[in-house]
Image 1 (cartoon, rainbow, N blue to C red):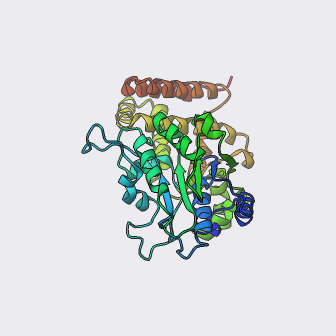
Image 2 (image 1 turned 180 degrees about the vertical axis):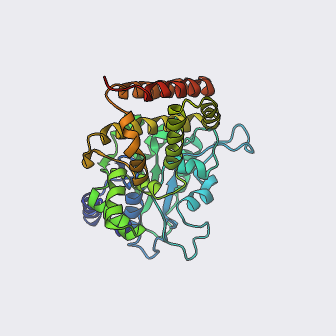
Image 3 (image 1 turned 90 degrees about the horizontal axis):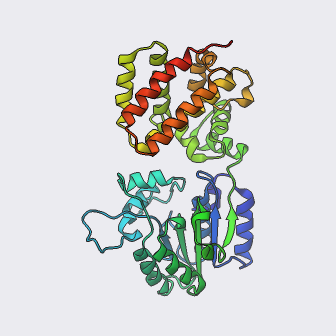
Length: 378
């Protein structure tokens, strides 16, 4: 993967290339920043930049001296004492990145993904993905071997904050006493969760959200959008390429949440109790994390509907479909009830997080929505 495939981020890319060219890269570094900014894309591009100086070119993410460490789960078929390692999920990892297991003839990858994407790739239902001590032991073994090409070895550790205690301590020792010509690139979204002793031993590089111009250009060139559509999606994405991709996916979670929001507002306004019960049954079937994300979306829609009343385009962050709904809906969100809506959705989110009965939570919430919708200005 080449640096040219990274969306924007020219400043940090320039800095990393200079350090590499001048042989001043630290042996351990950490790329930090929000989801969708391109941290993994930069990490893979940097690894390719270093390894491509040898005789063996990196094909997508395939190179004998490029190693990946990432959170995994424990499958039911494994014995209780077994500690999963990244190699157990190599096929799923390559498929998520868009590179088939064999890698033949497929070099273009998509390094923009989230933890949710990875959990789905592993077909996780309820388990928490972690980096185990077994992975640390396996990594130490792999990196102790001589470089396949006689040059650098690069290890990309994705989400190092998900290392358990045993693993973190072993990785710390590995960083303190690294094998010769080995580069560690950590890619973190929550660096504050890492051991302070690890954070103090790596160079931190902060990756900012993608700029509006770079986002718009990528949307035009990679997704074929018009200038107007690219501008709208870029504003909604707010520097997050994952959010931009989701906006373009007709089956995305956000679109599903929007349909639930519209349905709730209409049924609540009509005081359709039977319809509200059916709505409650539908959303109660979701997982709790998904329900909490839906409440976050509802909060955003109330904010957008309220701001729409001011008729200032720069304050609006809605898709054309959402804006089309707010043309008539916005007048029902006013100074009299906007705080009530916010409190209602926040309370529902908190109760769901506390494992309350979701059917009861959502039906009570739905009934109160009707009351708030009929609140008028004094």
